[in-house]
Image 1 (tube, rainbow, N blue to C red):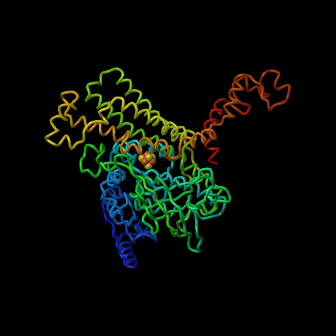
Image 2: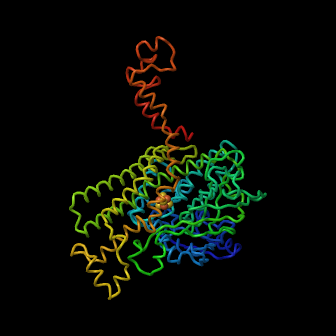
Image 3: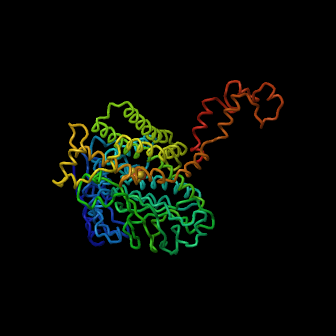
Length: 586
Ligand code: SF4
């Protein structure tokens, strides 16, 4: 029977326990005891109960309204344009970004998107939001990319929730392998955290990027030791950390932060090899909001000049002023040899993510460019059609890479699936280029009026409205305001507030282009490709010295003759070339 008990908060801890016990007793056979949660030591006590669907299964999904309400209860210390902000949710420059995250809750409630937006928890068997899920198959990886494209199409912006999902998947496999090798209990701690995230349907922000100071120096060699986040004190009950994380996507729309190291580290950097989770409003965390192009248009009260009135993204500088992290929340503490693994895996997942979200926003931009051409009366021009084809080709290539690295994913030791790292890096390398070309073509089609037209206030002022309406009109059947709206949307994505996500973030988010080229070089298996060429060209194997082996221009087992390597068939060779990330992952 459908049932909703809602949430009970702002109760003292003893009172919470008492309420929890009462409900646990009342709610049958103890099944629900498992589903009652207190907040972590840094949070207010909170109690959640879950809805049962018609089949009697339970789900752990917040409604969009509950999500917004839960954010209001957090005590962020946030500065925006030099001022402290009381309630980020209600700030006109922040709210569109909250709406984008809220869309991840809205679509999860919509039956038509159930397959993409929800998944079954491997921990509890419950229906959960896919953003809190660990990928249990290649189909999960594919569905993740499809979900991201869908959200890009619905919001035309960065919806922010992917970073935490990618961080959790990377932490799962890494902590599991750390425990296997070191005998630690990091994975158990991580699973307890993940359970809370799934049960409370929380937004997690993944905080990786340190401010880095002098890029030529290791963390411990910096003039200022706080250029990379570090442990400044080790206590019996936890650690104290200091430093900052830059470009934190959606941080003010998150409940929890997962902090990870930003680079592979050496033995001199043990204090910097640290990973943990912490409530986003924990004592000692300070945020400084990042500016975006045209951001103050959101303060003007209109809805045309902003380009995308309802949705957006945000980034913030996150500062840790000697923040205490309890031992139970720590997932890495000095194990430098695992920093590279964690960074590489997180980056791989997020490079996959871009194949979804950027193609979704690309769909919106292509549609906007096509409408602009319709409104200009240029849609039948062959060069316009060709430009739209080129934009579509580039956009689908991005998506294809996201799908490919998912379909080629492999099961890791923990049971979670990881993308093919080479294909994920190829995906992101394309993302550093194609959105720029798609944006260039959109600007080409839109025309210069996109950046020179008057404001919407001139459209409203009777003194100027008649001229704006008359002289900015394209085809007679389309009102000037309609044309202005689509041009402002193109402006928003290509050089306004959403260009942060669609352009510069495409370049630098999830690692700058050179980071992918390093991974492509590492994963590309050039030696194997040389071997393929050598065999087909009937060149003797230089490693085989037997005169017998080289007389016939073949290897000792005659493999050159049939086009395969000494060890097996051509099919097996192809498998080895495409399975480099399995090798790397293991
Ligand atoms: Fe998600 Fe894309 Fe934003 Fe990253 S840039 S958080 S993948 S929407």
